[in-house]
Amino acid sequence: MQEYVADGRGVTCRESRSGRADMSVMLITGASRGIGAAIARLAGRRGWDVAVNYSRSKDKAEAVAEDVRVAGRRAITVQADVGVEEDVLRMFQELDDGLGTPGAVVNNAGVDYDTLIADFELERFRGTFAVNVFGPALVSREAIGRMSTRLGGHGGVIVNVSSISSRTGGWPRDVPYAASKGALDSFTLGLAKEVGPEGIRVVSVRPGATRTEIWEGNQVDLAVAAEAVNRDAPLRRLGEPEEVANLVVWACSDEASYVTATCLDVAGGR
Image (cartoon, rainbow, N blue to C red; front, side):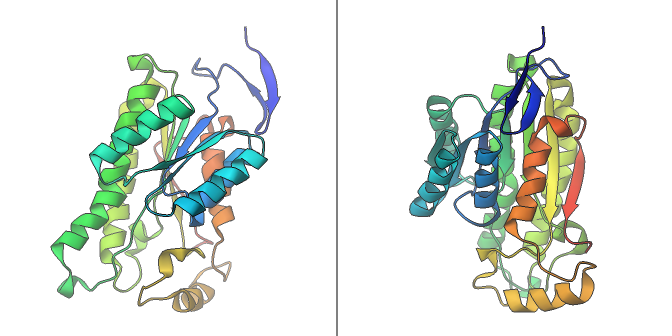
């Protein structure tokens, strides 16, 4: 029998079309600030319990978690560098113990590397891929082990926060970042085909130029980006973290139950 209940995400059925139980735990990597923090806060308001991952900003992560609790949901903070396998394993163990099996995982953590290709340092290029590509792969591996119906799980959703740079090539001096996001989009499409029969949807969300801290320290600063967006984007403005969060949280919901193996742009038309 299907039981319909009202929660923070609207009226939903406890049994989805795939037969899985409705899961209310979301893990968000890189959630102490920017887009990740906006996703966590909105998820809490929409009825999700949230694991807030951070690498260094513990105080900011705790503030985000407290906002989720104020919204009436459970929240924990989990320190981990997603580019380090041991950290990812520990993060999931803490998630298992603190909140339980996730129904949604958002791979949001990312780093930028500002350089000309003529001048790049291999270790920093590798570091960009370690966080932006290998990190989501490690996190997805652990999530699949818990979600996959083939492995005894109840299904779930993986959302990879990519970038419009994956198809534009990025800003000047931004090729390593753009290349890593291109790899992440390919990973999304391939993984979705692999785990779709196991009750897992996989989606990429591609923000355009968004007002976050990632611009700090880059030679292409926020003012330059804003000028370019005002010239080239149909909406003539930068995006806000909350606008990206709206799409991510929707992609995790039952309203997106037939959406997988796709890249969703939230870039003001760029």
